[in-house]
Image (cartoon, rainbow, N blue to C red):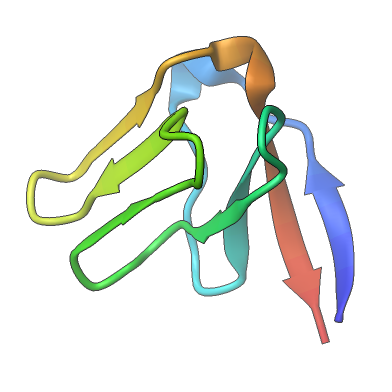
Length: 70
């Protein structure tokens, strides 16, 4: 599967969708932008809590948004 990195404006929030993933620049882990419940990267820099509709990014300089293309 190919990856395409997306430029985004943080003032408009983080994009999400069925083919959108967040990539941690610290541990290079990828987490799906729309998990059913809770997801986090290996190092804990990105934490996504869907029931609370909250994405926590501890180091904002270490996140990239990517779209997976089939």
